[in-house]
Length: 97
Image (tube, helix red, strand yellow):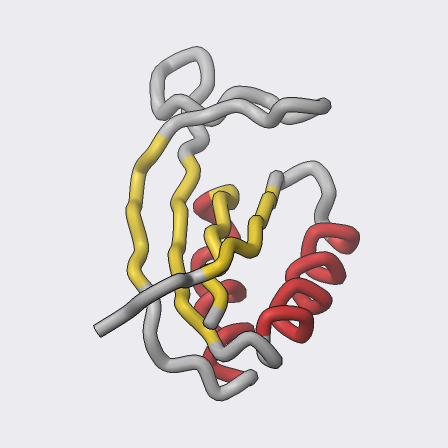
């Protein structure tokens, strides 16, 4: 099993959920209205008057074989809309219930 943590501009919310559903991944947890700033070239997304945009984050635990497919689609989505901001990490899951 793998955990995929995705931090993204709030504008992506529907696309991210639809991407997971299109791959047969049902389960996920979303955190809404979180702030942050990209480490390379991203603009701050802080939800204030100066930087009004916000981020969301999503965590989904997937079968190991599915993780590369999710990441490939996330890369394509990010490449098509680089100014919005999207980052994802795959982490090992040692145990689950």
